[in-house]
Amino acid sequence: AMSQQQLQHQLQAMLLQQQQQQQQQQQQQQQQQQEQQQGVESSDNSSSSTHQHHPASTPAAAAGQDVAVTGSSSTVATAVSAQSSDLEDDTSEASDQELQSEFQESNCCQDVLDIVADELPRFAPFHTVTALNRLAKLARGMSWEARREVLAESSFVKLLEKLQGQVDAGRLNAFQLSTSLYSCATLQVPLEALRGSGSSGTGISRLLPALESAVQARLADFNDRDVSSALYAYAQLKARRPSSLAVVEQLCRQAQRLTDKQQMGG
Picture 1 (cartoon, rainbow, N blue to C red):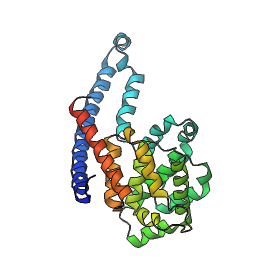
Picture 2: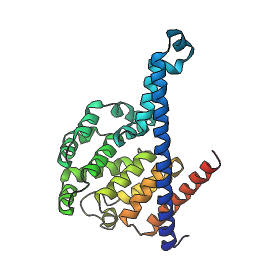
Picture 3: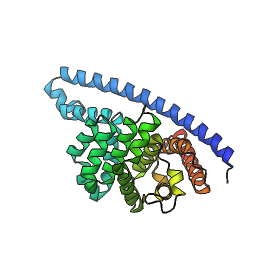
Picture 4: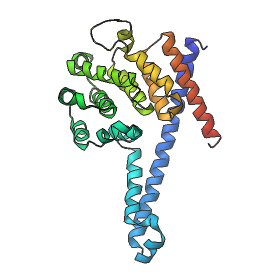
């Protein structure tokens, strides 16, 4: 097994590698967007017979291309919705545009917490993770005192309880698991301290162990983005228990496998 110092060095190397890969992907996406824009302009000037022989230039196909481009740079909420499609009982929930719009239109953490208070019973994993990630985004730049007030809200504690129940039931996919870890770390949720609190009355003392077990179960599904987000979360959470270090080591190995696969052109 790796020592803690070796894990830290490998973690830093992996995060740098993931950052470089993300920059390359952004450059490729920009190039693709330019090429597709040129294709749309070309299709506008083509004749109707040309449209029949080139289906990719039809308005419908062009619209499909636009969706593919914008999807790569869409909000996390949209991405979580797309990743949730493999869960049958989440399909109808993921298409709930009303709730999604409410999350996207939230301007402060209290707006999100109000949605949680009103709608939590009907939350699917998609909604739970989206709410958590939206809170993380809105909390950026907040003072620790203001952020602590958010974490102390009963609606937030209930949101974490909902998350733990869904994780225990095995309902989160790789994207949702990594996003949950990332969001908790960004919000500075004391997951490590909660784990050692025992019966603290919050009902979420097992959240970090539950997330770690789920990550290990779905590790083969983790892509570059998922691994990067999870490693960032562990770096921020400063979780140093053997079980956490074991998960970090497995994430590093998954990152190496993905890198090797890319180098081989697979």
